[in-house]
Image (cartoon, rainbow, N blue to C red):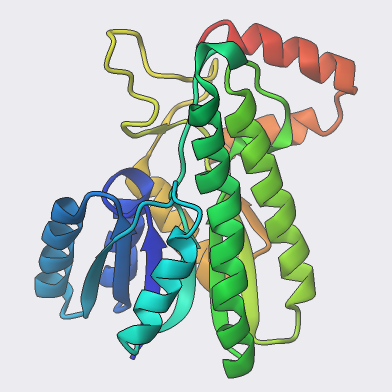
Length: 258
């Protein structure tokens, strides 16, 4: 039976993606560190939609986690025909405000694990001549973001990686999509220290279920890239015509409001 594998599925956009895919009849493999949340979600979605849901504990900060997750699905005889690289970490503040290991963990999850999972699952997809990969990038992929420097850089990698794979897989029956949400109301940006959530001036933070619905449609349509929300699309489009010095200047002004 074909399954959709979603990393980081225990909350936020990942959980909402799981809900959307299950609602549309997809059996699921849910992966994240919090196995209790995963098992509860798997049971709920299986009961509500009559789909098979498997929960697997996976900590993608470990260099071997991607291969272990791949081997686990193969050992269970699970055919993953849709891979959703959603798991991600965020470091806020100047580079030196977080220790080196925090940045290395971010790069491991946002870059290395996504690359490894795509490499591992792409080959069986190509052999089957069907499959989809959805990489959750960000609108921060399109410009430098001070005080979110490693996060934005990792998402720029993921966008470039996804678009390159979309070209490489044309005509194979496999598609690769980069999903680029802006600030979304999740635990990642809703701070627990009393400060307001991260936001952009004049741009509404989207809800995770909105991002997931658009992401599902973009993935199933085989789009190379989708930016969530019209205002986010307008902001990204505007940056394309800015000289890089102007882009840096505006990024600095906006980041002061985080």
